[in-house]
Image 1 (spheres, helix red, strand yellow):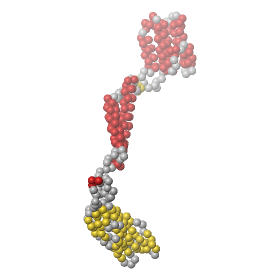
Image 2 (image 1 turned 180 degrees about the vertical axis):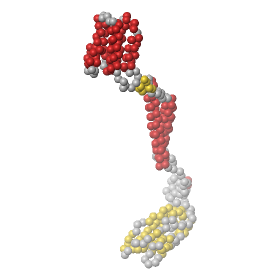
Image 3 (image 1 turned 90 degrees about the vertical axis):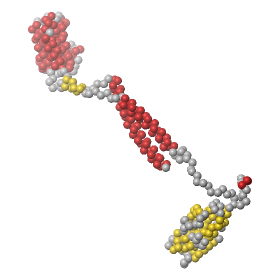
Image 4 (image 1 turned 90 degrees about the horizontal axis):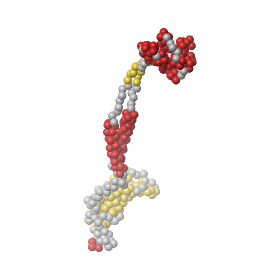
Length: 350
């Protein structure tokens, strides 16, 4: 059935229904056609007011078709359906052309129930089948297809990392650090140690009187040790002449004459069984004191800072604790980042 109404000057509005009858649940199309200048502004009803029992499923507007002389055809199609049997009168549709309202004619639609359907042999029936409206169905949840497995795996990994972090933290607390304070030590300078040894030799005068070899051995060993610490070469393993030659490179040769006399006398006593007098022993002792006094270094620091010393077990404990602390910090940061990633992923999936 076709209805038409003429508007002012060159504007024509027509409406047409694809079928005046349909079965319950089927669909019909109402086509609204406007003939107007191709530059016109045409607004079709997208949600037309229909009687109760008629549903508008869709409203689609086609591109303008030019027909010449500046005219064009504007088309809009409404898809209708119904689930209730009855005769329905479709009200005129309002179409706006360049701001002016135009109405279509009234249409009619009859909705019928399927007839002659034997439900006993419904599977063999070849005619139209009526199933009726379906209830609202919920979408089945598929955690893999929907992507929810990603935050699930991330949450399991986060839980495992938290357990590992807590366990490492408890291990770190049990391995308490071993702390030793640095100490200040007063160092005995080489000339101080040598003079203390000479004072001990001087106090033990019985050795000089009864055993001159032991006396000169103690005296020369004291000087060798002093030279070793003062000049940095191993005088303990050198002969007397080698020591004098080595010292001549760093000292005034005239200052070594008395030291040479002392070492010569000591060699004679130790290797040639030379017998000395008490005044000669005292003179050689004074020669040693004079050499130490001329070559000593007073500008050396007598107070030094001693660094803490750890046993092998203590060093191992400190290394393990530092490693555990580093791991706890790294795992803690990774847990925070993983938690933020889980929250963002869940927000994107919702």
